[in-house]
Length: 65
Image (cartoon, one colour):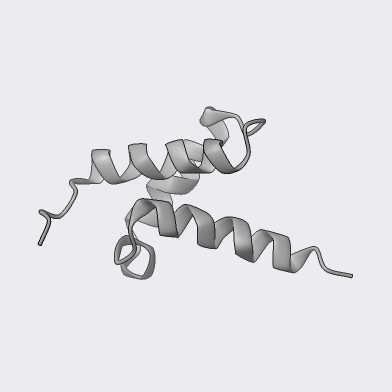
């Protein structure tokens, strides 16, 4: 079992994965989103990478015609 991540590490990894998923994404825009997600149990219960992926999956799903 791994130790839980502190908030700063969780946010950093979430932002990093968001940038991996969308290299054009500005870190200054991604960080506040990750910080907000970190305060919510639903997101915080996920790995930061899974949370970032879920946000992108949700956003892409909204764009379907």
